Image: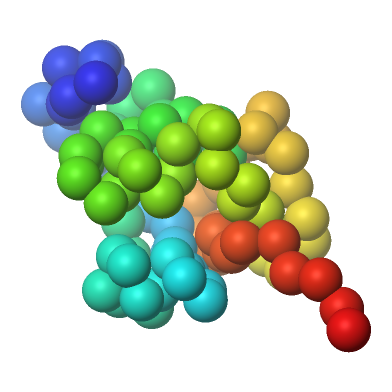
Length: 101
């Protein structure tokens, strides 16, 4: 999957969403960042499409955010599923599931 899989990436960003993405635990370590602000291409407007978009970066992104990897997502600090539609300014957090002891 590459940028061409996200229609409208070359179109003006006037209508695109901008979100802040946070990475926790092993994701922060493996992806070598704790957060980033992203202007999403047209067509990337749900949690699931955001995850696909990030996976399209390849390498560690593709491995760590693969659909077979257990990764939780919260939007504005509320747990979210892949169908949840994003809004401009949302904070999206990706983190591995944790267990208590």
